[in-house]
Image (tube, rainbow, N blue to C red):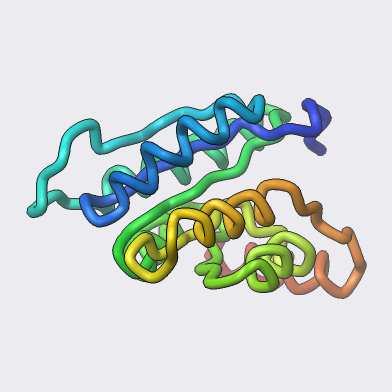
Length: 159
């Protein structure tokens, strides 16, 4: 059980297509009081290999949660698809691709997603910021049906 403050630590990673959005979110969320950890990249490279950045962010979220910290993650890319796929390879990561406020909140409420993927080339900065904030501010419902379903996924993941 996570017993840390209401405001989660946020682990963020991107590929080259999401670098401007990532920089904005790091600044914006820090100003709002979030403890933001940037997993890179640090400089623009149109040929970067995003999986390592996204996997590292997901690993950090899972490690923090296992240590009892309230932590969530954000992975960004052009569409968010590849970043979601990479981060979902981390055992214990539940990464949801969100394209609006509703999908971001449902990912937390129903799936207890701990990382959100957002397509930086699919939204304005304002829209993407709203999606990220909706995700970070929502809680898991703890309804039995959702707990049961997440456990089924975790059991398969542990094979």
